[in-house]
Length: 312
Length: 308
Image (cartoon, rainbow over all chains, first blue to last red; front, top):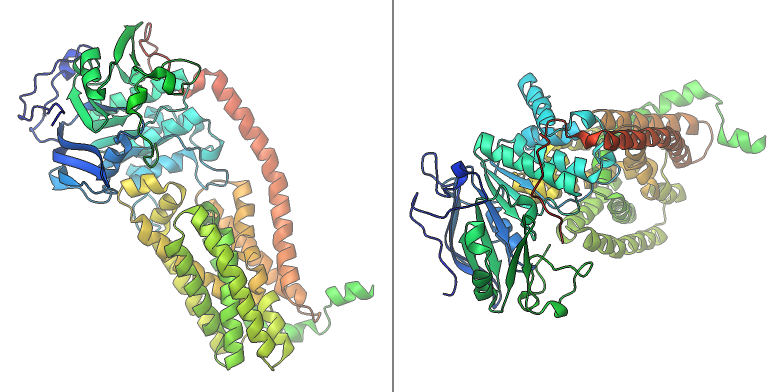
C-alpha cells in the first residue's frame, strides 16, 4: 500500500492546520467522540481500475474535509458511495453509526450548479421548504413552526430578497445560495458538497463558502467538500483528502499540499507554489494537458489524468 | 354562414344537454385529472411520453373494439403497458425519448390494423383518435370516476416527494426520497390518466388535456399551490366548454377542447411574457444592490483566490 494511512485513533490525530482557526485544528471527534462518517479499509474499483482502496476515514461533527484530486480520481464516486448510490468494492462505511443506505434525512447534498429550467413550479422559498417537508407524504400544509423555519433560513442564506421569485428566474449565485439553504434546512449531520462553487463568480464563491462554513460551526455539521480547486475554501478547511492515481493522502492542507507529498502521490514530479494566499499545483507534463487560458490547472498533472468517471 | 352554423349549433340544446349530462361529468373529472397531473408532466419533461402512451392506449382500444371487449379496459391495458415500459427502460431523458419514438409508431400501426379489420360503426373508429361525445353511460362513467379517483388520490399522497424528485432528483435521492419507486408510481398514474383522457379527447389530442393547461398555468405563476389549481381550472374549462360547444353540431369534440385550451395558453403566454420582463428587471436590481448577501460580513482583504 503506497497510500499514507490516516491515523485512526479516536481523538488521537495530531495534524495541525495552519490555515484554519485554532479551535478547529483537531480533526478528531469533539462532541461525544462519535464520528459522523466512518470508513474502514474502504475501496472502490470499476472493473480492474482501482479508484482508491484501504481508505480509513473518520469525519467528525463540525469538521470541514476537502476532497481533492484530478478528474476521474474518484472524488464524486466517494460522494456516491456515501449516498448509497454506489457500492464499496471492499471495506465498510457507516453514517451516524449505521451502514449507509440510499440517501438519508440527515444528509444535505449540494450538487454542482445546474440551472433550474423555466417551468419549474417552485419559488426560492419552496425550494428551501423542500429541505424541511419535501420527503413528506400527503398534502397537509406546513405548520407554522416549519414556515417560520423556512423564513429564518431564507434570511440566513441571504435569500429573503428573492424568496418569492421563481427559481428558474434566479441568477446562478442566487440559485446556489438557495440550494445551500435547502441542504441546511433539514438540519443535516453531514453536508455533501459536489463542486458547489463551480461556475460561480468570486463574490458568490466566497458567499457560498461562508454559508457552508457557518453552518458547520453553528450546528456541528460535518462537511465533505469535493472540489478541483482548494483555493476558495482554503481558509475554512480542516483536513484534505487528496486522491490521485489510485492512491490518497489525508492530513491538514499544510501536510498534504506539499511538493514532496504530491510528487509521491502522483508518481511524477509536481511542484506546489504558494503565492498571494493561493496554492497552485504545477504538474510535470503540463504540455500534454489542456488548460484554460494557459494557466495551470490547480490539481491535475497530466500523467495522473484518468478518463471517464461519471459526472465529473 | 353555413360553416358557422355547422360549427356552432345550439338547436334543441336543452334536450341534448340532458342526454350528455354524463359526458359533462366525465369531462369535468378528466379536467381535474389532467390539471393535477400536468404540472408533473411538465416538471419531469414528459410531454412526449404522454403522446407515446396515448398511441399505445389507442392500439389497446382498437384491439378491444375488434375483439368486441370493453374499450376502456383495452385502452387501460395499452397505456399501462406503455407507461411501465417507458418508466422502466427510460430513466434517462435521452433513452426515454428514443424508446417512446420506437413504441409510438408501433402502437399507431397496430391500432390502424385493428381498425381496418373492424367491421363495426365507423364513428367508433374515428372517435378513438379524435375524441367523441357519445353519451357516456352510467357504468362507463362509474369506471371513469373510479380510475380518475385512483389517479388523483395517488398524486395527492405522493405530491411533495414526487415534486422534489421531479425538479431535483439527485438532491431528493440524497435526502432519502425513493426517487425510482416514485418514478414508476408516477408512470402508472400517467398511464391511467392517459387512458381515461383518450376516451373523451381521443389519442391524438391527449396532450391538450394533460400538458397544455399546466404549461399555461406555469406561464403565470411558480407558486406550488396556484400552479395545479390554475391548471385544473384551465383543463376543466377546456373540456366542459368543449363539450358544451360541440353539442349542437355533429362534429367531434376534440377541435373545441383543443381550441379552448390553446386559446388559454396563448393568453397566459402573453401575460407571462410581461411578467418575465419584470422578473429580469428585478434580477438586475438585485445584482446592482450587492447581490443579496446582506448578512455576510464584508471582511478585510480576502485570501480567496481566482480559479484556474
